[in-house]
Image (cartoon, rainbow, N blue to C red):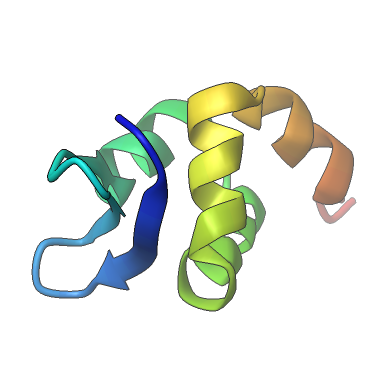
Length: 81
């Protein structure tokens, strides 16, 4: 892989696709990621926001970050008493 050409969400495959200048491509299956790392609807919503509004940040988080820690930090879940 050399330089990144594009990063976008493909609604037909439900994947965030990264394309590189050497012709290689990475496709991140967003459904599988959500099933593995999101524990509740608030965490799923946060991932969905990134997928639709900032797919590059989503790809960076999944490929190089710690999505579980990120989701625990940015989402707040308060069960009803």
